[in-house]
Length: 626
Image 1 (tube, rainbow, N blue to C red):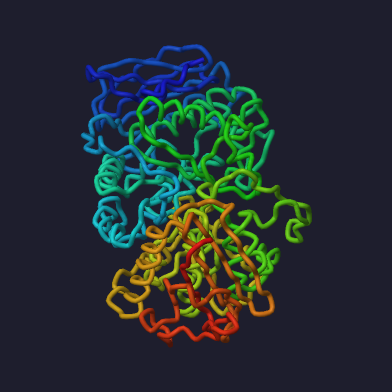
Image 2 (spheres, rainbow, N blue to C red):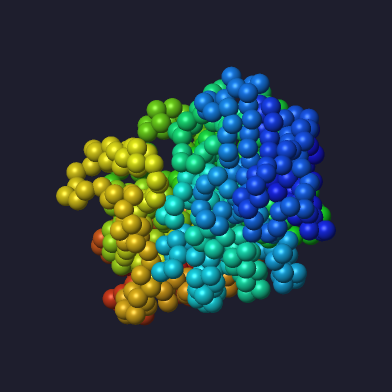
């Protein structure tokens, strides 16, 4: 079996120091494989290696040349689902498709880029303040260079890391990124590999970390020719997208190798700081060593070699801390996870209708629980799932959980993709933001949230297969058939849907949006400057729900500082108990006129240690911790 080398790729096309290339392809069912160079007439036969690999070293390819493979399968044709005995396919481990998906890949030497981020060693996990963005809709041009133009804006906001939604090559120019079909290739319409390297380098030189969203649970439907090479999928397991990726069935070793190499490439060759692995609950692996644990093992080896921090965050819908427990404790070693349950409880507390998965959440009480225990369901019966669900997240630090009031999924999976700014009052926008930044977890902002972007973020594609496009259209309509709405489901294939989802930076010319941006800057500053906020010790947190008033009291402390956060999610004034009120100092009143509210003074009944808090607002006090 080909051994993984953390210092360099061992699959796909790789340039050597002398300018020649090594090319290795896994095609275990082929009888012959030829390297095809578009500008040359004659294919070059490759040498068969053990375990189904084919290899060639040649000086016939230069950077930028287009190449592919001719696969002969006469002897083992029964293994193929395709009819032709000779197939022409692009490299499944290609780094670039300068002309989009087709028969040919584009040779790319990632070592050509001249890095200047040598002093960057990574960001401590506790310091992540994340800004999630989609490259295509973040700017009018929708490319990496346009993200660079906004880095100073993000720094002024207080962001410490950007999270980029998937950039793996997909069909066309419009996609969320989760339909990628070439996991190693950087989307050509975004600028390709060199432009991504340039962006990461610029981020590091400004002190920003970069998280990249990757998808290892499925491959998109159009342009997916993996089965023409070998058993990348297995019918042993199934996912919402069809047969699962083959991580534990026959011939699984080269498939595992392929995805481990992908992880190492992003860290080593693109200097990515952290990966966010999409929906890892849909990664099926019953082997002795779970693929995530093996990915963590090699990531740690690379970090030890380079001296740079590399983190692995996951989207997980299982409330199972085995995924985020260390390898030494029998876990899979993931460094952190998104918590959708915090989001769901928060939105129900703010008035979200309790339909679908929101039906499992009672609002204020579950929000208080999530502040203390991270998982809401940690061993209780879930009516939505109709089973007992989850375990307690014991021994996991606050830095292992990422929370938010909105993200691409929770926004884009609404029928119309409405943003929170168009669904809730201005006062609730401020309260939800503060609820996230007051948490003992890592906060995440979805692009445009900080100034109240009003354009929706809708689901969009640019497939070329007409039958597939129609299937996606019907699927979206069926998904929302039970919802009564005067408008039609947006057409995901329409360019209008895509353009409608772009950020409109002109909102920042309006006073209301400027005010919300200033409020977010203040929140992030408070988060960074107060020890009780920026030390993520889950044992120094107390949250109490006052159900009949729809209010919550969150207390966090560290050494000599105690912070008390009073949250009123109701639509009227509430009187709350606050012992030792006279010794506390106000850090934030979201209802202050400074933030577009109605009052400057804090109304109190000090002799009874009580305080009156405005509707849909938060008060944050600092005092001495005894």
